[in-house]
Image 1 (tube, rainbow, N blue to C red):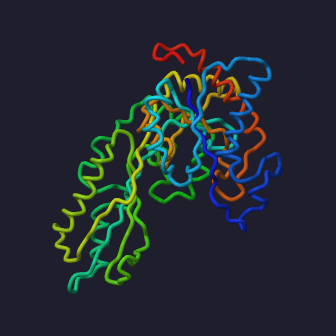
Image 2 (tube, helix red, strand yellow):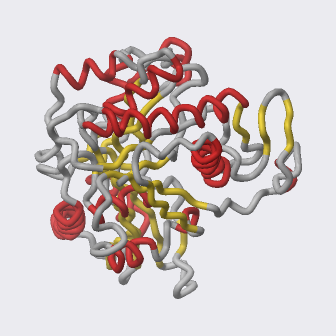
Image 3 (cartoon, one colour):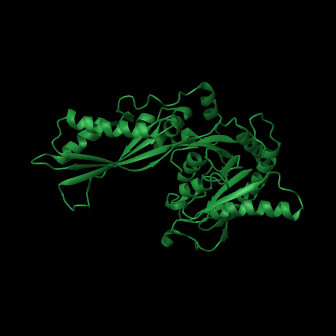
Length: 374
């Protein structure tokens, strides 16, 4: 049994940024334009067309299918975790794997399969003035203790200790990625990255922890006081980093830094959101079926890629159901998924539909001792 995840909602369009009516499907330059064409609704149509094709030709579906379709994807999938938990023992009891078509290819020509996303911890750090303390200087001292922006290094001791070790086999997966020309983007990279090769650059974004600190220092609106300032810190987590441990390391380090530096201001650290990282084994039966289907459809080996962003729906499905999850994007990176002028090329729509049908067929045929009875 394969469970297909999809969604119906779209981001509220900024009408002035669209060249076509986002609410009307429009065909321009061999592309379908409209809100949701490259993501939720467009992808679901591909699935429905597959089922219709099997039905019209009196061909049995090669595997059993269930759908989970939500309408809160662009609101951090609110309520999804609770729904999955309540249905875990009945609706999902016979589900063997999950497939989602979120994301995009790394380029426009060569198909990709996504097998991992990063996690995020988002913190707000408040510094409140006490007596004659310098809140801006204190905030800057804390930020400088957390992160080295030049070397892009997290300065929290032992923060990277549990990151999964990179192997030669994994480097080979990165080397095989097509349509990523580092020479084209090299001039736009920071000086410290301009000499990096493809593998090092991609691993920096996809595979290694990092931290982003907001440049703006904002006054807190809660007390409407200029004596309180705030900065937001986003901590990127990767494979084998435990979210609870990372939270404790971060918050404890901030407390220790305040004491160590003798900061007189009142410092408060609050975690405002978190998203788990996710990763799958590309050698698993589910991914082998997708690889074979990609070769069958596009006559190309797929590139196995990761996302340098958290995907709430995927991490929620993974954390709640603990099933093998395949992310099989259908669109190229020019589709502007979730943005103004969202579109899907004719090629991606029609070949993507064939790809999903081929995936179901390959899923039924793939020969692997680990494959359950689906």
